[in-house]
Image (cartoon, rainbow over the protein chains, first blue to last red):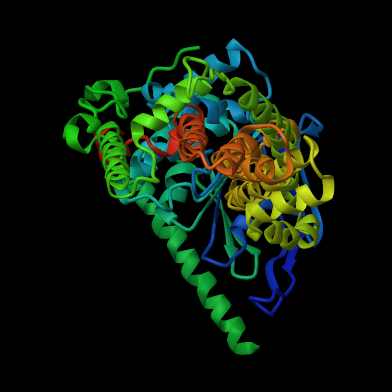
Length: 255
Length: 295
C-alpha cells in the first residue's frame, strides 16, 4: 500500500536577479495520504501546489520538513502527469512511452500499446507529438504516467490548458483508467468542479502554502459534472473556499 | 490485458491522422520542383560560361574543359600526352579530408556537449570557440602551412581546425535550446543517465549536430584545397595550382570544377539526406482536427 507522508514542509525560493525577493511557496504543509485514494489538492494560483507536487516527485528539494513516499516500506515508483504533455518532439508517441519504461522488451511495448488504447490512441503510436492535438498529447502524457506502473500518481493541473470539452473528455479517460488501476493519486487543480468530479478527498491550500481544509467526497463513481450530488459538494467546497479567502483577507488586514 | 472502453478510438473516424490522402508535393507544378530549378540554374551557368568564352578567348570553352577533364581522368590524350592524373591527387586529398574530419567532428562534438551541457565549460570555452568560428577558413589554411610546412600534416590540421568550431557551436546551441521541462520530466520518471544522454541530449540536438557536420564538411573542403594550393606538392589543390602556374586555363577550370562537383555531390547525396532524416519530425504535417472528433 502506497503512502505519502508530508510533515511541516516548507519551501522558500531565494531572490533571483529577475525577482529580487524571496518567495515562500510552502509554509509548513503537513498531510498524509494512504491507500488507493484519489486526493485533489485545490488552491488558488500561488498557493504552492506545483511546488508541493515537485517535492513529492523528488525533483525539487524542500527548504525544511520531510516527505516520505513509500510502497510497503520501500521508496515508491512515481508517475507524473504535467501541465504540459512534455513529450520528446523528435520521438514517436510509442517511443515517448518507452522512454520512461525501464524494462525494454516486447512486453513493455505491449504494455505501452495497452495504455495508449486505454486513452483511445492505439492508431497514433507511430506519429510524432506535433502531429497530435493538444488533448491527444495530454492523453499520451496520462498513458505514460500509468505505464511505469506507479505506486503513486502525481498530476499537476493536467487539463488546465484544455478547452472545456477537451478537459471533460480527458477527465472521462482519467476516471476510467484510474478506476481500472486504482493508484494512489495526488491531483493538483484550481478547478473546484474537476476536484469534486475526480477526488475522494480534497485538500484545500491557501496562499502561502498551508493546508486550510480537508474535505471528504463520498460520492459513487463514475461521476458527471451535471450530477446533483456532485453539484452539491461543489457548492460546499466553494463555500469553504470563500471562508478561506475571507480568512486570508482578514489576516492581511491584521498584518 | 484487455480493457473495455466505450470511448471511441481514432480508428472509428476513418482515415488515420498523419496519413493525409495526397501528398502536398503532388500539388507542386513540375516547373517548381527542386530538380527542375537546379537543372535550370546549371543550364543558365553553362550558357553564361559559353557566352564569356565567346567574348573573351582566354576563358576556355565548355568543350575544352570537358576534353581536358577526360585526359586527366585517363580517357584520352591532350597535346599528345595521356596523363590520367585525376585519381592520384583526388585520393590523396580525400585521405587528408577524411582524417581531418574524423578528428575534427568528434572533438567539436565533445566540445559542443561540454559547452552546451555545463555552465562552467561554457564560461571558459564559449568565447574561444566563437573566435575560432569567425576566423575564415583561409586563415587556418595559411596558419597550418606556416606551422607545419610542406607535407600532409598541414592540410589535415587545417581541416581539423575548420571543422571543430562549426561542430561545437552548432551542437552546443542545440543542447542549450532543449526544453528544460523535458529534463524535469526525465527526473520525475527516474530515466537513467545513459538513456537521457542518447534520447534527450543527442536526440534533441541531432538536427543541430547534423547541420554542424554539414558545415564542417563544406568549409573544411575549402581549407584543404587552399593549404594544398600553397603548402603541399600533392592533392587536388596542388594540381589546380599546377595548371594555373602553367597558364593552362582549361586545366585550372577543370580542377576548380571538380572541387565544386565533389562538394555538391557530397551535399546532395549524403549531407542533405542526413539533415532531412534528422529533422523528419519537424516536417510532418500537423493535424488540424478538433479534439472532439476523436475524444
